[in-house]
Image: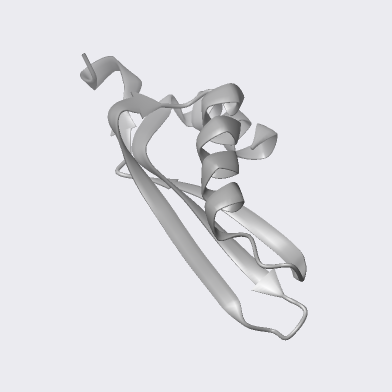
Length: 79
């Protein structure tokens, strides 16, 4: 979440849909996302929503996890 937040700060972007991708030891891939009513960009917000998704959908054998943000907008264009 820290690297994503840093990239968002650098580009002055924010987004509304936080997603996770989980790769299991069996090489299965699980993707889940949540769309939020407001734009987010801080590592705390990204961590909170990614954690919610992980708690709901965590398989027992996760070997890799990625976090993404979509529905991007420039921060100066968002209310």
